[in-house]
Length: 421
Image (cartoon, rainbow, N blue to C red; front, side, top):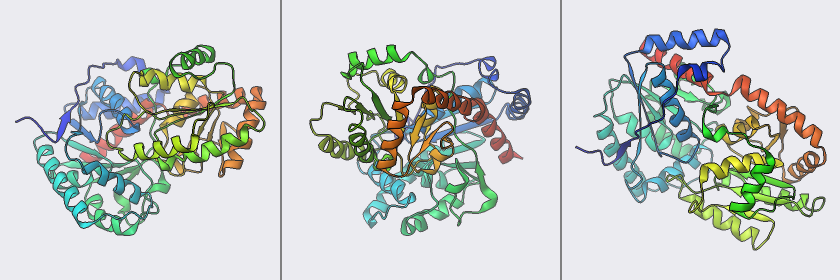
């Protein structure tokens, strides 16, 4: 019978081992191949909320082909976006509560979440695998119910260090039931989780992916002018991430207004195309930002993906900006920061722990805690192009040494092997 609640993604992308092994030192390369040889003949299945939009989908779109190239059988499923009108609204609330927001979830909403989770679990049961990996709260409870005899891993891509207790209490038994619980940052781990099950490793970007393409700033600015109407020869500040209260786009606009006292011709681009089906709150945030921006001719908002090549536009925005900011208050990791750093951008990041994992303040970018401080750093980078270039080169080196995909694949293989021992 055809799955109605989850769908399998058919990936045509194929890569060769040699294409990515060249990014690894010899010792890491040998370790990766050793773990891969142990896992040949085993099957790993990942399930997440959406097929595209957001960092988790981007990671899985690369991870599955990498694993297959190493001889590890791997599949990827996602939740049918038509599964339930209310489901993703509820999981949005759960996501916010796990990051500390005092969100009220009523009894009917819990019943709906539970009901849909059991439907998903019934279909997960039909999937044959040796290791089952569930990503984030949308799949948390469904994975808890399914495949009780399988090795199961829960990937938490968010900061659960200061949760909203009433919601956490409801979900803790499900989270604690997994054989392994993976976080991207040691500081994100909630103290009530069983320590022996915790694994920590950072996400990474795929250097072979089209999204990591580097083009000249001149070419990128021409593209933004043609397809986004952004003036070509003015200082450009950009934040490239979804419209989300945790990304604090309002704070970016406040900073930008201060920057204009020194650079009156500066432009701001907020690029957050609404492609992720699990984020219905994005439309509300976008409307609020649009109201604040008003009819300003120097603030450009990119939300509706229609008639836009979302991937190409995102790549061009990252390459075009004079200064890239990521003003997140909470951030699981922030792959958009990694992507910009790979493109030699000295990123100005907010106080989120995930961003502080990447940016060394004053070395390869800046960490700021207020709109005033962000404005100061934007003005500094616009006024010191040589320093901006130096920091951008240091940013790329940081990604090369720490946050490229072959290292992440090795982490995954080691994790899977630890489950099967």
